[in-house]
Image (cartoon, rainbow, N blue to C red; front, side, top):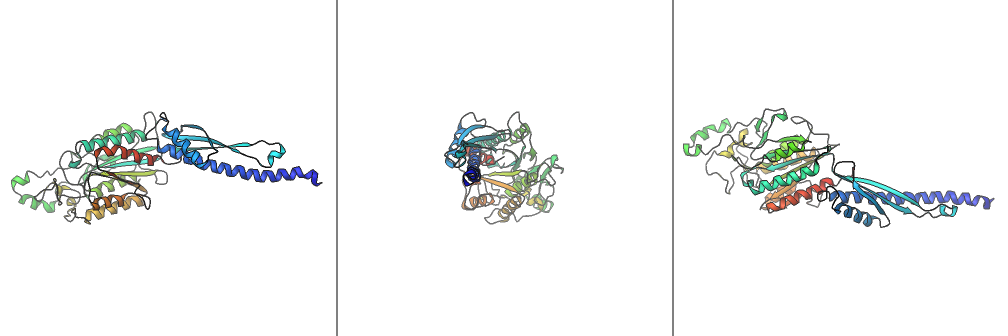
Length: 400
C-alpha cells in the first residue's frame, strides 16, 4: 500500500514545495522588474523615445543587480505616454515534481513606470534681476520639461501651469476672478494703497515721476493647468523679467500655485490629490523682499514702486526683507499649506545666496528626511537646464 501511495505522496509534497518555490521566485522577479522599470523611467528625460539605449542599459543593470538569474526579454515604450515597459523571465528549478517527469518551469513578470497623472506648475521669479540670460535659460528648461511631459501627437493625463511672480501675481479671467494683480489679502491691486497716497503726493515731482503706479500690466499672467502644450509653451515664452519692478514676494507665487493645483475655486482645473501627483517647481534668484533691503534694486525714497506690491497693496507696511521677517514667515506658511494640500515642492535657488536664503529654500522643499533631494542650487545660469532634467527624473520615478 505504501509503495502504491508513494508516488501520490511525493506528488502532493512536490506540489507544495515547488509551488512555494515558484511563488518565491516570481515575487523576487516582480520586485526586480519593478526596480528595473523605475530605473529605466529615471532615464526618460535623456532617452525619451528609448532610441539611445540609455533606458535599456539602466533596466538591465537594475534587474541584474536585484536578481542575477533573471533574463530581461523586452524593454519597450509602454502604452502610457512617456513610459517604459519591462518584461523578464526566470527559471524555477523543480525539486520533487521532476521525479514525476515534470520539467523545470519559467515565471514571467512585467512592470511599467514613467510619467502620467501629473499636475505641474512652474513658479518663476520674474523680477528684474532675472532678465536676459537667466530668464531665457529658465524658459528653455521649462519648455524641455513640458515637451517631456506632453509629447507631440499624444494626450497624456498630465497638465502643466505657470505662475510668474514679482511683488505680486497677475491673474487672468480663467480663474473666474476679475483679471488683474492681487494683494496678499485677496483684494484687487490698484497700485499704491489709498492709505499711502498722501505719502505719494508728498514726494517731490522728481521722485513722483519715478514711481510707476501700474506695475501689473507688464507682468505675465498665471496659466491654469492645461494639457495644451502649445498654450503652455506660449505662456512660458511671455516671461521676459522686464518692465516695472515691484519686489520679489515669493509667498504670493507659492500661494497662487497652490490655488492652481487644488480643485477648489478660484481654479477648478486640478484633479483630486488621490489621483494626481501634484508638483510645484519654485525658482528664484533673490531674497523674498519688498525693496527695504540693500542691493542695486533698492529705492532711496519712499514710497516707490515696491509700494505697489501685494503687501503694501493690502495696506501693510510691515512686510520687509530682514531675515526672519514676515515675508520669510509667510513663505514658509504658504509652503506648508501647499504640502498639506498634497503638493510636492521642488525648490531651485539660482545665483549666490546667504545662509538664510538657502535655509528657507531647503525648508520649503519636500525633501525626504535627512536629504535635500527636492532642493537644488544653481550658481550659474547654465546649471538650470540640467537641474530641470534632474527634477524630470524624479517625476518619472513612478510605477504605472
